[in-house]
Length: 265
Ligand SMILES: [Zn+2]
Ligand SMILES: [Zn+2]
Image 1 (cartoon, rainbow, N blue to C red):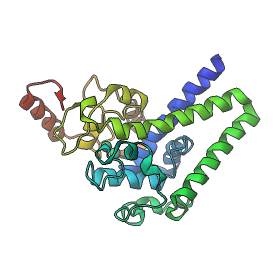
Image 2 (image 1 turned 60 degrees about the horizontal axis):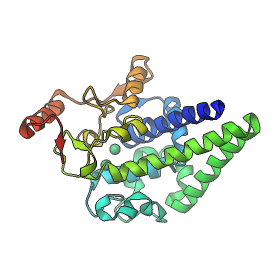
Image 3 (image 1 turned 180 degrees about the vertical axis):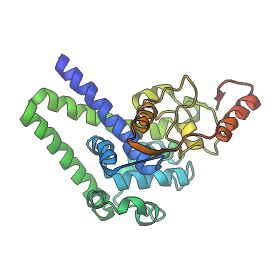
């Protein structure tokens, strides 16, 4: 039981950090720069948590930011709860207004990412991802036995739920608080931040999408930011975007306007 719990916890943290640091802050937002080996170090655990192809993930996420909470947002709860949860994933191709060849040119250059993308055929790309994910657990089973393999599989499947849940809950204004008056429904939710390694500070993120740091206040714990900061100190990260004084001042004005520490939506 201890072995199962330890592997599950370790795998969960590894995969969840991969999604937040690798797929989200690095590939989708280029919030920091690093070498290819460091990039793969973070994108591999994301891919191995059933997250789908990196180009697909980043392209959809960039479209979400461009069209946030409008009819063109791929997964806004405003366009239907079921669609924003899992419904949108069932599509076969990108919608007309989303094109990785235009919106993810930087990622298409990578031959490995391009292979995983399967020419933009979502079903093929998801099938390939599922196969590689299962083979990874089979390899763990062969080498270490069924307990680590099962724990790794369940951790991967658990992490898979987190971004889709975040897409819904962190865009439902009643479920969290706002530090910034962004033109969308985004909110900060502490328990999502905990599950998603710092990604639940989603109103901060929509206000400062290019920032490698999402938790702004002392109470907003952002584990992924701590790791990016440590990598920067170690020289593994060469450039890192942080909120400017002017960005932070906007938040303070917001508080003064509201007369509240947290603005509740
Ligand atoms: Zn969002
Ligand atoms: Zn984002």
